[in-house]
Length: 242
Length: 191
Image (tube, rainbow over all chains, first blue to last red; front, side, top):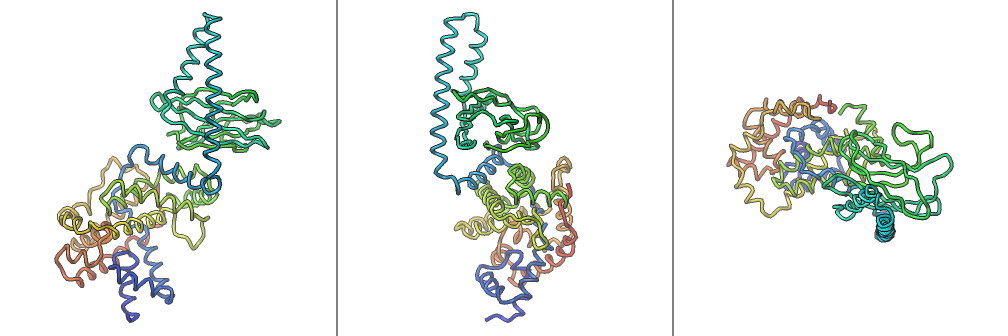
């Protein structure tokens, strides 16, 4: 049995975490019964709150910050929608693959019928090359009213271009339009307006924005028709973090 | 960070604003890695600690109130406690103890500030804490370095330095008493 004097003497040691394990356990067992020690330990912790900043900072390895954000947000989502993710991924990839196949077939027909349309064909092949060479494929399900669609990004990490597929969405609600956004380190940067065709997936290719800092992810919102500047004002539909 | 910015950031985090999370990760990660790596001396483990820290904070963040510590001190404390837990769980402690030479930790304790990094967020606090550490007598600074920044316990420090346990306790108490006075005035992370 320790005297109260012992606890008074070891408050700083406990608060700074330098007590031996047995002593630390003894102190912890004492705390719930002693308001004075609790108050003093809290005060010491507050006074020394900045002491850890005496450590030299360490530069994170490339991609570490992105992994943190992705992991934290995944943990956030998985609690509520764990079962949805595999299903949505499968559905999205099937639809995207369908769109890719249809686009490829159409390109072949165009090439045969209109030899002069080489430029258009080259653009389409470029788009497909991103999908084939994509280092990462990200997807999110999108719910608009009763209709469920998806947002898929094929990210080419060599050329830093994305092929974006939006599928299964109804026409934008009256007075609104679908807007694609880049989630950047400094701000949300407006990307392309997404004009959906309910009959087939909508697909576009984009480079990275020139401002806003490091690109951390992307989002899809419904924006008021008149809103062409500034941060998102409308309803968020989906977001993806790299 | 400034108090207003910290309050705003905390409100946004509590509201699950993902852009606020991005800002916090950008600001805090180098410092949290520094704390964890200083103790664990293992890059992968230090990253695990930082990851766990952000997961914990994201789960538990509440809007600012009088009863909460500052955001950055909260992060630092969580990271440090996580690192201590890992450190204490290691079975390889003896090897670590024998690997740390006194001359090495003594030098690390007062590593000079690199002028080029003066613009780094948080660097001002770092230099102030450094200055407080430098003002300590060398034997007290060494004890703080081993105890606080490398996570060794009283007994381990006594064994490491070859001095009586009571002497370790005395040096640490004197040092922390002085640091409490010096650092208590630091209220916010001035960018």
